[in-house]
Amino acid sequence: MPSISLTRHLIEEQRSGHVTPDLRLLLEVVARACKRISVAVGKGALGDVLGEAAAAGGGDSINVQGEAQKKLDVISNEILLEANAWGGHLAACASEEMEHCQQIPDAFPRGNYLLVFDPLDGSSNIDINASVGTIFSVLRCPEGVSAAQDQDFLQAGHTQVAAGYCLYGPSTMLVLTIGHGTHAFTLDREQGSFVLTTGHMRIPAQTREFAINMSNQRHWEAPTQAYVGDLLAGRDGPRGQDFNMRWVAAMVGDVHRILTRGGIFIYPWDRKDPAKPGKLRLMYEANPMAMLVEQAGGAATNGRERILDIAPTSLHQRVPVFLGSKDEVEIATRYHLQHDSKAA
Ligand code: FDP
Image 1 (cartoon, rainbow, N blue to C red):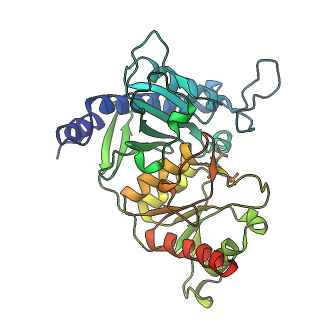
Image 2: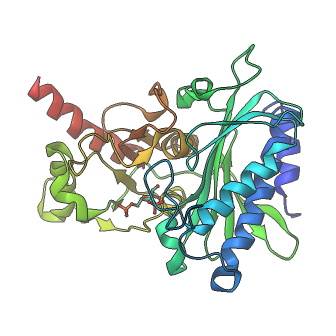
Image 3: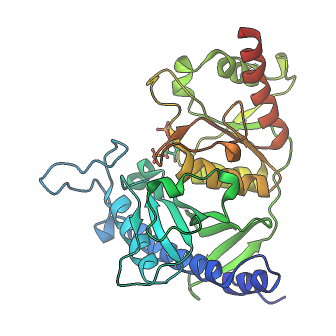
């Protein structure tokens, strides 16, 4: 059986009418940028890529989220911006690392798509040589818009035309959806190409594995406490079975495990900073992951409603996330909705 490269897969999807030539080429460019990021990540301590990025005036560089930027955050952001500037498929890019979207420079033709990315997710894993990743989402540029602004990106997740991530782990993997299933490609380092290794990933509907940062437990709201408490009670509790816990601390790694063998990933609202509706970003993390998970038969909510139906109000909006095995996400969501209806 000949191996199927990402290029061949996308050409076949184009022949089936699932992807336009422009979107196909755009996805190839993103994949190529991810290969370059994979090389930079792989250099580790030998490549002067570890540690914090320096600010222009000295000290550590802080991004728009108020977080210290790692050198690899900055390098990955630049690789994605540079790779996507000249292809002619994009109108603008928005990155978790930049306050506002960036239009394609006037020197290059502009296309009909908008690219959204988190260049290096899980960056606290960089310096410990653990998995990190790039997450991306593609939207259509609204009709008639020639110079896209931030508000043109504010489209609900169900309008995404493609979403994916690249996981930089023991192997580099690209996981992609264009709305016709979720497919995983592994980077063949000798050939330099992504090869299809799992087509049509399926998340089992039921699971006995959950992922959450338990150190925040005391800050959670009552229904999250009740739900996780019942998981922890195991076979003696209302669920009548034991649950295992895993936490990679990079969303890409946790979601990849769930796409591979099921589970539920939770980053709930908490009281640590009541002004923030969650830690994870709707446009850069929750929407693309929700599309990938739904396309693999799973579910994704904010504890109350489907993530892909949330109308974004700002580029860097945060959101609580419950995603993974469909039945388990429904159970977790029910705890929150029942709590709300009792309180009403
Ligand atoms: P990080 O801050 O290291 O970039 O997107 C943020 C994220 O990582 C997710 O990848 C990860 O799931 C989560 O934050 C980890 O947060 P904790 O600090 O609570 O572990």
